[in-house]
Amino acid sequence: MKNLFPPTPALLVGLPVLIGTTHAASLEVGFQATIGSEQNALSVRENGNNSEGGPYFVSVHPENSGYASVAADLPGTGDPADAFQRPFSGPVLGWSFIGGARDVLTIGRESGGLITYTTTDTVFDGFAQDQLTLWTESDPGPDLLNPENPRDSTGPGYRSFGQIEASIDISALGAGTVNIFYGAFSATPVVSVVMKDADGPAPDITVEDVHLNGDRANRAEYYVAEVDFVNDAGYDVIEYIYLGNGVDDTGNGRFGGTVLSGASVAPFTLAVTDFSYDLATGTFAASITGAANTSYILVEAEDLEFEGPNARTIELGDATASVGSVAGNTIVTDENGTATIEGVAFGTLKNSSFIRVEVPPVAN
Image 1 (spheres, rainbow, N blue to C red):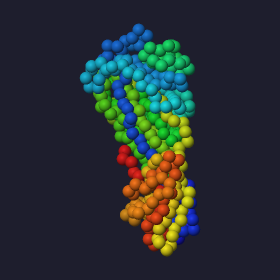
Image 2: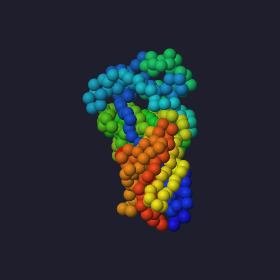
Image 3: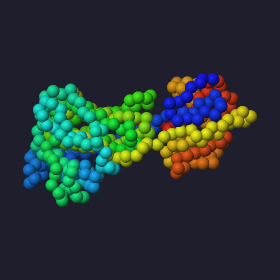
Image 4: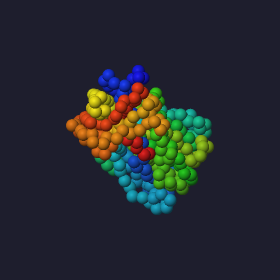
C-alpha cells in the first residue's frame, strides 16, 4: 500500500484507497467590443476630447461602476456604432491604468495592488489626449454618458506602444472578470490570456486571443475585452500579453489599463468527508462536499498523477444517493454543496488503488 496523502482535503478510512481532489476552473471571453474610433464623427466632443481614437468612459466608483462608449465604429465598416453603457460584472476589486513618462512604464492610476505590468517596449509616450475619461473618487451617477459629477482624471494611456504583460492576482477569488482596455493604430492587436496555478500541478488554461471581433483599427481605435474566470483556489494568477500590432513589441499601438471585478468571496473547497468499503460486496460509499448543485466524477488510478491509460472513470452503475443525486456517471451535490452515495461497485481493491473526486473536464 502506498502511504501517501493528497495536498488537498481528503479522508482515508483504513483502506488502501486514497481520496483526493482536483481543481475546477474556466477562462473565457464573455464580451468584447470597439469602444472608441477616430473614424467616428463624435470623436471630437465639447468636453475637450480630441479625435485620437475617440473618448471612452470608465468608472471604478463603488456606487456606479462600469464603462461606456459614444464614439465607436462597427468593426470593419467605419460606420458609427450606437452609444452604449455596460456595468462591470460585480464589485471593482482592483484597477490599474498606465500613462505618464516617455519611454518609462508608469502607473497613472491604480487601486487594490492586485495588478502589475512589465514591458519589453522601449520607445513609447504618454499622450494624455483624453481618450479615457475616468471616475475614481467622484460618483458619476448612473449614466456615464451624462454624468452628474465631473471626471477625476483624463489622459492615462500610451501611444506608439507595442507590448505589455500584465499579472493579476486571483488567489483569493472564486470567480470574477478581468476587463482589459486596449487599442491599436492601423493594425490588428492581439491579447493572449493564461490562468496559472503558480505553486501547484493544475494545467494552464489559455485563451489565445480576446480580440474576438477581429477589427483592424483604421488609424486609432480602442477596445474592451471581458475575460471571465472561475477558480477553486488552485489557480493563483491570470496573465495576459498585449501586442499592438499582433506580432511583436514594435507596433504603434494604444493601451489604457485593467479593471478586476467580480465577487470577492472565498472559493469553495472540494473535500471528502466520509468513506467506507464493504469487503463482502465489493462496494463502497462516500460523502463529499463542494460547490452547490455541481457535478463530480470519481476516477481510479494506480498513480497519484492520474495520467495515462491506467486512469479510468468509475462507473456508478446502480449506485444510489441519500444526499444529492446520481446522474449517469456523475455525482451532483445538493443546494448545500454535499452529496452521499452508496453501493458503488468497485470489486477487489488493489494494493495501489487510488480514487479521486474530480470536476468533469471543461472545454476551453
